[in-house]
Amino acid sequence: MKLNMNRNNTRGILLIFNRIKKIGHNFINWLYPKKCVFCQKELKDNEADCCEICYNKIEKISDTYCTKCGKKHEVDEELCFDCKRMEHVFTNGRGMYVYEGVIKKSLFGLKFFKHTWIGHKYGKLLAKFYMENQLWEVDLVIPVPLHKGRYIERGYNQAEIITKAFCKEKLLPYNTKILRRIKATTPQKDLTDINRQKNMIKAFKVTDKSVINNKKILLIDDIYTTGATIDGCAKVLLECGADKIYFLTIAIGKGL
Ligand SMILES: [Zn+2]
Ligand SMILES: [Zn+2]
Image 1 (cartoon, helix red, strand yellow):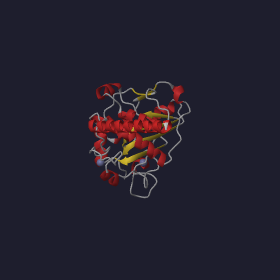
Image 2 (cartoon, protein in one colour):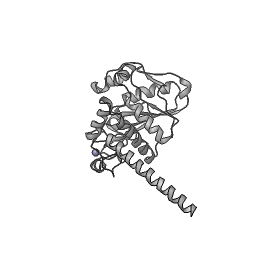
Image 3 (cartoon, protein in one colour):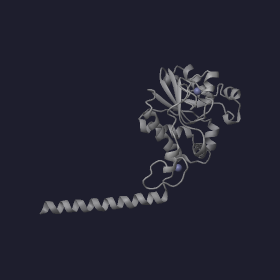
Image 4 (spheres, helix red, strand yellow):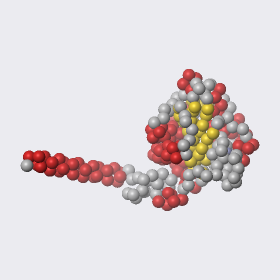
């Protein structure tokens, strides 16, 4: 009899606890409604990271892509147009989506409108992409750094937000201090291909060589276009003793 009463009490407490938890959960959802990472429309209860429309529309780059830089291309060739005419310093890289449509819009929001939550979600999706594609074994993850001036102006580095969420999922070590951008470069989007490369000369610095010595490093950034920024980082990391440089980006420009 006493045992049954105790059981009933425990069940009652659990029911009350679950009800409070649900009310709390609904309140948080009301306060901060969950939004689609791609189109930012409010999500229904049964949708997780993105809405059903985006889920059916957006494809990860997983079939025909450049074996060097990961750009999606239609032709069945190993290297994209850019990688055929330009030698890269990095070993390999992949981008998760083609840089167009809602992907372009959401990354713009992350970079210029303080939509940092998009960076957290993308970091988690990138970890899934890394696992699904069984990508390289790495020792250390480094976000592509922003120059101090731009960091202060923006308040955050979007690559750093993506990196932290990615590493949390994958339990990989990251370092946000070891690679510094020491030159306040002109935004790459405003430059021609040749000037993009020139813009990156001596733009980065390694603060402690011993941290990267002999390490396989994964660079993370939001967008890859010609690869000049990743090459700029890779060059200084390799000169300072790193073993191999890979990269992962959320989006990548379409290849030819
Ligand atoms: Zn959507
Ligand atoms: Zn390529």
